[in-house]
Length: 274
Ligand SMILES: Cc1cc2nc3c(=O)[nH]c(=O)nc-3n(C[C@H](O)[C@H](O)[C@H](O)COP(=O)(O)OP(=O)(O)OC[C@H]3O[C@@H](n4cnc5c(N)ncnc54)[C@H](O)[C@@H]3O)c2cc1C
Ligand code: FES
Image 1: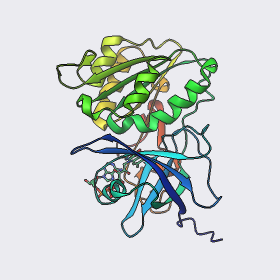
Image 2 (image 1 turned 180 degrees about the horizontal axis):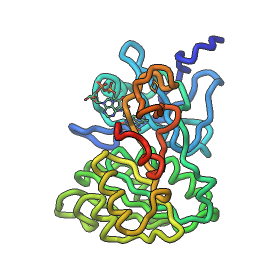
Image 3 (image 1 turned 180 degrees about the vertical axis):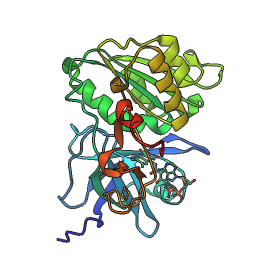
């Protein structure tokens, strides 16, 4: 067997779910390693997916590590590689190498209230940690989710979110009014400000477009959250994924190795190159 770290493991796509159609299409893929040579991951880690002949893209592993027999990836169609992934069919084989990066410190958060705040495809990295905390609910305080998308059509994991409402508080939002929509209308940071989650014994985990993250953090601060109570992920462009090429750097930090998960306290100390 080769010890070349750039060689991906062959993985078969066995399930594809069309989450969102149209210009900002999102599909969720479930994959299984073809040979018995897979890896286990931690919440927040990513993998480099390759479409042979097209290239590679770094994608968050959105399934919980508690599920051992497949990996899940939710992918927004963006450019060359992600478009090629969207063309793939169930039964097709892709390359997967990883897992890469650090992880959300779930162990450290035991006993705390966890507030998940996602926007758009930013629910994918949160999903893994949310599902894990949910499966070990007794270890944590209150769990809640804020999730927003541009329109009701752009919501990912629609059926799962419906089910999730039986277990935890879910605050959904869309950017502009729609006829049948009965939940919050407005941007995610405003929904957070509206519902005023308490910072007492809490940790907030936010992923989404950088502009959303910026205002979510501002509003969490206004509600009294301290820098070490806020966690996010940084998605700088990546090439090698293993701290060799320097593509993902923030100052001396390799986001692919030292990140992508950072507390706001940690991020504030780094140059604003994200
Ligand atoms: C740690 C990490 C986790 C990620 N997790 C997910 C995920 O779970 N789901 C998902 O859909 N995407 C995720 N991404 C983003 C994904 O890697 C890029 O969208 C993808 O690599 C684009 O490749 P492409 O060949 O399709 O597009 P390209 O043809 O390379 O580029 C198309 C456009 O997308 C822009 N782009 C490329 N990479 C990025 C990036 N990292 N951030 C912002 N813009 C970019 C380019 O500048 C260009 O404008 C993640 C990125 C990182 C670094
Ligand atoms: S992606 Fe190459 S060093 Fe991080």
